[in-house]
Length: 184
Image 1: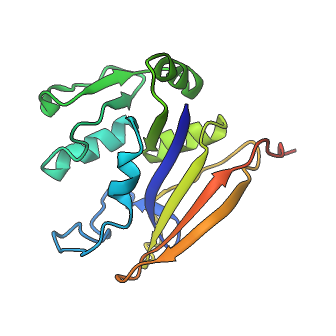
Image 2: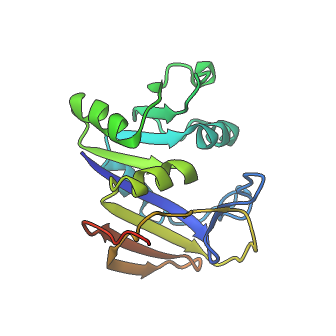
């Protein structure tokens, strides 16, 4: 199974404010962006979305469920209350990234969208992310929840594309390279 990341960061590498706030993201205030920056086309390529519990809780505050029609797996070491999503295909799983990928692969999943800071970090550390698409928003937060955290090895990526958008966002895509150099 292939796993990809599609995420926005501030220029200084944060995916949310320290309290989880996303008010700095374009569109967060309800304004029309006039462009979706490739998100819809990307989501059309995935057959399952894997998110962490904190991301799930944040998504619940959006007002409407953004993943209509896509199966969503919420990762957490403790059970998650899924009653608020109604009939949406959402389930809770726990386990290592390798175990999650194995279960999803057994079910026939071919491409997973991995989202949420800790979840992305765990999947990267396990070497399970093949593509990373980062859209940089022209804002400097000065602190918050970083996209990347401490690693035990370098994770090499190969740049494949960068494109600017009219509203000032810049999106870069990378593919993972096998291996990585352990740190001493």
